[in-house]
Image 1 (cartoon, rainbow, N blue to C red):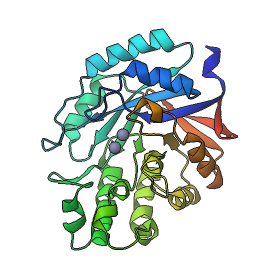
Image 2 (image 1 turned 90 degrees about the horizontal axis):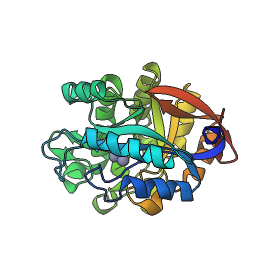
Image 3 (image 1 turned 120 degrees about the vertical axis):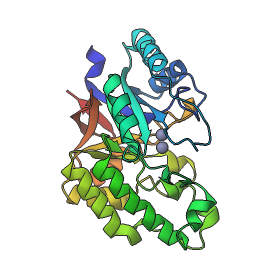
Length: 282
Ligand SMILES: [Zn+2]
Ligand SMILES: [Zn+2]
């Protein structure tokens, strides 16, 4: 088990074909991770309970766990694989969330806000016009995220300013997350009080956006407020994205004053030292 220790790359937000919007087999993602120098990975598949979800697909949990076991047997000497799930709106689907979290042995649970309400997806034109203007939509998004942070069952809040990925065609100014500082600080306060964490999600960098999700200033606020639990993830849906820009995320964490990054086992946080854009697990 010597590969479980030492200096390594980690990626705590990766999808496989068990997600509705990903075609990459888990085995391919494992091989890509190893090739990218990733030694610990969490496969965080989409759990969608909204009947209006665009790509109807139900996450086949038993098949996922079976494939995870097969990949652990095959690649376990090079890659530590954590079982994960990315639950959309866990605060709104509490019964379904409790059932799935109780039934299976999850290592890591991401909580996401993809739908601001049961019928408005935050990546659509409808969202950016539903609240008057696009700035009001962002504000409404962060206010709803406070409900997720307060009442949802999750370990880490995923991609905090998710609509930023999709806003470009719908806004007539510059999106600046600092305009929503009050709303975001309220979310961070709830996260810290409940012993939860946030992630630095690097997918937006691949979408040619200027910043990670959330950007540096939010990581700075979180740290200054006493935040300690922080994960890094690529949100890869393709094998050539596994491990992408994780080094950047770790440097950002460091810049904010973090000396450690968080890993999870059976939903318990474990802190790993950040060393030269790698983490050191002991
Ligand atoms: Zn997501
Ligand atoms: Zn994701």
